[in-house]
Length: 257
Image 1 (cartoon, rainbow, N blue to C red):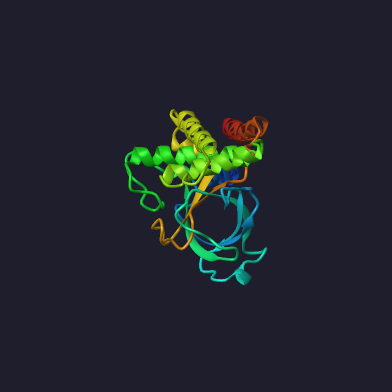
Image 2: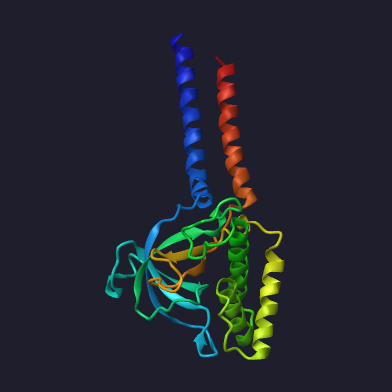
């Protein structure tokens, strides 16, 4: 009886060890699949890298992102903040170099066609329209970030993003540029018509906490998340094989008692 109990205790330990190993391996994957819900961060506008059209600088811009509560640029350090490229969707408001503000972070995957996300800057539309608009803007952001556009195409795509949310964004453009922006808009909505927010889980939206268009403390921005390499199939297979081996060893030990 004691010997059998000892075998059972060892088998239980093996099960526990296998579960712990599996949990340790899979926990990072679960974290990647479940982004933090709308955290607040501090942002500092650090500059413009894109070209200008009609006197307006276009994407990309750059910012530092740090923990909530920072109030001046000297508080952003390499230890507590990250420099990222950002893409503006807000033509109503302005931001100056060195400006600091607080923003909520929303992954585009969180948007729903059944409920408007009032945490975003643009929320005075139906849920389906909000999803469609933000996905179209995200698609244009991806085109700019891809680095394969001409200077003019980058400028036009930036104006197309602005036009999605601001009907006045194209005022002052030449007739030819205006027509090209409308073509870019049409292409964007066509490209995303069969997509879902989950297709843009690589996009975060940074919305100023005082987010009323035209009187917000900052602009709203998109950012593309760094690519995270998925585990190779061979790695997953080895992990599964390890668990199978543990189970097989346990079975053999039981049979030998």
